[in-house]
Image (cartoon, rainbow, N blue to C red):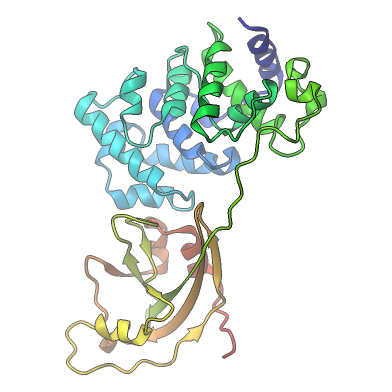
Length: 356
């Protein structure tokens, strides 16, 4: 066992996380689900979502056959919803190709939707104790510092170097603990900002620490200005307090989730309403809506600014009917649907109109 692995495991035995719900029991399905949920999401946020998810869908076959709305509702609030859609698609493929189980093979795992090499390594090492490296964001940061690897870790050349290092450091025993130790170490000590080098178990072997370059490494991602987009969303409530939701398209942002009807800021909302008033011969008159405070939401590739328009107390003669893409939903039923986090926040926030 390398000296690095030995020291890291000794640190993990005392300071590591040993009571995470996916560790008890540590099955392939539970490990896989946790790894997908933990992508771009902190452990403390994931835990309640994980517990609800496995309670409702305890294994691969249950996930494979569940209605997609149920899966998205369980995921609602975690963001990056492609993860949930890929998760179910992978489960369905496991049922079709692997007798309802995750395959114990690197290439077969990577062939499943949403599973990359690092996630596959985490599943193999934690579920079966197989000798497989991982290279998530925490591990990239730790190895880039320890070996003074120059360049942004997102580039293929730098990533290839880090994979080689990660593979060379693997121990031959305690692979599940070693994998968890790497993630815990990067999350709690060797953090992006203000790493706790004085408590680090491997600082004497860390090139960045010895050279005084901890703040420089890993090389930051080249900065870029994110574009901004503004849209109008329609918050429509009928006399019973039900809200009109619209199914998002099958591809793109928030694909297949239920959201508020969305228009370009230059579009006429009344024309949209009249266009969806099914079966009416004459145009319907709509009161002037209340303008609510804008809602900001950031994606990885752009920033979105939502401008809500609120109509309350719509009567049946306004004629917007349920169909495949539109649904009137009682507030008590909102929790049963997959709804984007900023939209859910808007639905639950007090209605405070802006002055014209």
